Image (cartoon, rainbow, N blue to C red; front, side):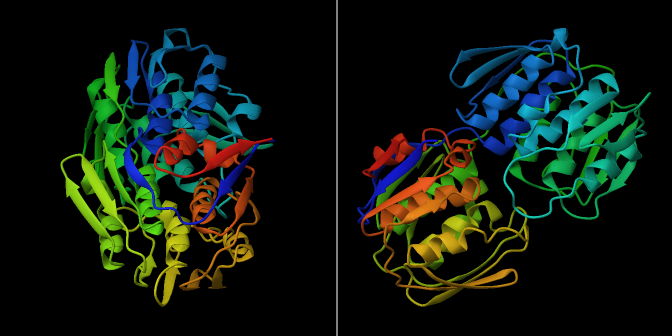
Length: 418
C-alpha cells in the first residue's frame, strides 16, 4: 500500500488553485442518471476513487458509461438489466445507497448490499427505509443486503425524524417517477441536494423546494436526456482555505460558490484570517498567530462536520484554547489520537474536544482514519517539524482530486511512497 511522505516546516502556501466538482453531489447524480433510458452527460466530475467505483458499478449493472474527458461522463442506461450491484464494489463507498432509490424508481426493485465508506460511528439507514416504505415499497434487510420491491410507487407525505442528506436524496430519486405527489418534511438543505434536484428537473422531473426543509415532488412517467455540470466542492474549498490559513499563506481559490462556504469564511475571519470574496473566487491570507474560537458542527447552513478535523488542526496553532462540539457524527473524533501522536494537546469529553493552541507539532507516522481526517493529517504534516508519513491514504483519494499535486503547486512538499 502506498503512503504519503510530507516534509514539514510550515512553509506558507502561495498561488492559485482550481476547485473540483462536488463529491457529495456527484455520487448522487451518477446513480440518478439510471432513472432514464435517454442519454445523460455529466460534466465537472471530480477525479476521485468514489466516482470510479460508481462507474464500475453502473457498468456491472449493464449501463454503458464512457469518459469523454477526465471530468466528463456520458451515460446510456437504456441497456440497464440488473438491480443487484456486487458487494466488492458497494463496500467501497457510503453513497452506494443512492442506487436503491434510483433502481426502485426505474425498475421497482433493488437488492443492494449495506454500503461501506468511512467509519464515523452509527449511521443508520432507517430514514431511507421509512421513506421508501411510505412510497409503497417493501423493504427487508437479509444477510447484509437491502432488498426493496414495489409493484407501484405512490406519492406520500414523509417526515424525516432527523435531518439526513442521504435519506432526502434517496427519497427524491424514488419519488420522481412515482404516481402522485410526494412531500418530504424536515428535509436536508445542503447545496448538493439542490444540485441533484436541478439535475433531475433538467431531465423533466418536477421538484420544488430543494434547499429548504420542505421538498415537493410531483411524479412523472418518464425522464429525458440531460447535460449537467456538477457544482464546485465546498468541502474541498474549505480544506484548502484552512491549509492556507494554517501555513500563514496567501492562496486564491477559483471556481467556488461563495455562498456555500459562508460558515468557513465566518470562522476564519473570527480567527483573524483575511478572507476576500469576489464572484467565483476566494482569497485566503493567513496570519502567524490565529485566535482561538469555538466551533459547533451542524447540518447546512451550519459549520460542516466534514471540516471539523481540519479546523482542529488549525486550532492547534491558535492563541488560546478552543472548543469543538461535534453535533452530526458521534464517531468523528477518531483522528484525535493520531494528532496527539504529533504533539497536539487535545482532550475529548463525549462530543466535545478541547484544543490547546500554540502546539509545536512534530512529524510522525499516522493512519488516515477516514477521508477528511486524512486531509487533516496532510495539513498537520505541513505544519510539523520533520517528516510525517500517512498510511491508509486510499481514504484521501476517495474524495480529493489530485490533492498532492494541487498542494505541491502551492509550495508543499508531498510525495507518494511505497
